[in-house]
Length: 266
Image (cartoon, rainbow, N blue to C red; front, side):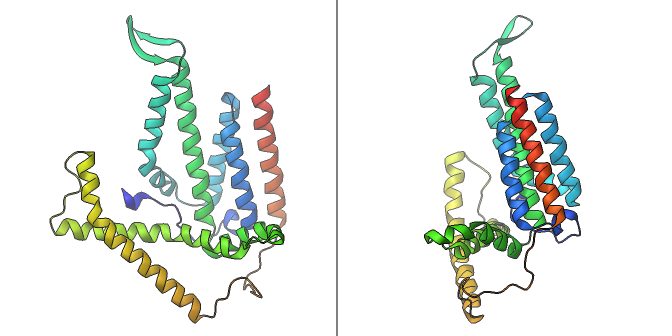
């Protein structure tokens, strides 16, 4: 299950999204999140689904990668849908005269929440699949640069965020290795109740934390040995620039979100 988590992975492909400015992709993701959580009505949902599928195809990332990223979160999606299905007040659903203790309003809301969660996960995955950690750091730093006037360490904050995202696949891989090593020595993580399974995971957490601290120390030593001193006076091998593609992307996104918000009140 852990190996199906794809957050933080970058796939170096040749697509329009890979060539786009990282600031455009970050701001575009924020706009998409606004659209996902404000969309209402069948037309609005159809527009959001169609646009998300278009972005997925435009990224040229295999569709199975997005599906694989959804696997670990199916439980949350289904659980959220069931909560809305049974706890939303409204008209009770009857089948052959028997009450199912579910409501039509709850069923509609469950479908909406499931679609929103799926679109949210896929949209976030597009950003990490098509943006390298270095470009992501530069994009976040550029967006936070105006806040340096009030003392915000934009470069350091951007670096920490990108490193945290980048190390998610590394820690997942380390967890898989520790889990297999523990199972080879007789550990059982699959039997028993929830409390017993939680207790069985404790011996795995200690080596995981030790490995995480060791990797953090190695990264710090590597940065020090390369004379890393933060963002002051730092130059870039590949400076980021807005292009015509970014301009048209911004126009399309703003128009889409404008239509979504307008449909909500119509």
